[in-house]
Image (cartoon, rainbow, N blue to C red; front, side, top):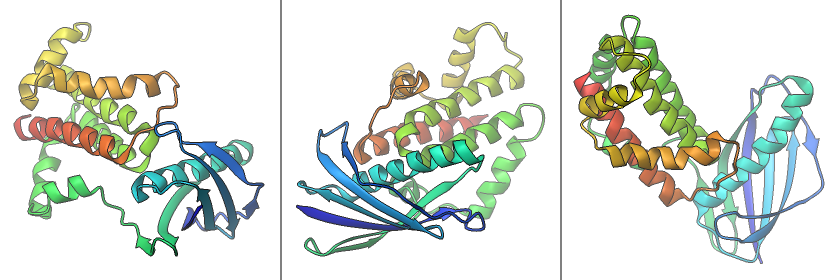
Length: 239
């Protein structure tokens, strides 16, 4: 039996919460692996133990741990009217010699942009967000951040970010609001992407858009992020 300990914090810390509930048994949707979670929140400080017979990819397990905690706090938020968020900071497993502090980055995105000159890029993008159409670029960026923060809903937010680009095209290029075929054709032309890429992103989004729960592995998230960022990068370059 493997014993994983996660440490984290509930935000905002000024809205204090202490919560201890009975253990929660669960089965990972993707792998079918069963495990038991025990958690304690004291003054917003999180300790979450996961006991499992299997060894996990630490990023997959981190995403599971965050989902468990966020789900419990969603119930609290529903009852109290509080919008809590969860940050998982550290994972420990003594037998496997794991002591890992998680960053806030998505490695495949961080790596692709490690050479950019940040101030210059921000200024370049800011110039494109002016005018009535610009609000849709802001929506796109906000949804990309949400995709990074919510693993289970990655597909939903990635596709909604692309949908925001379609709305941008309606305003920027004065397209017929009722003609989605022309709108998507324009998105592909500006972004320099093919139809299959957009369909792949939509396929990842559809079940979640309709309320289904779909687990996603770290490898699948990386592929989805890469496709989405390719589309958005091309669009921002040429818009």
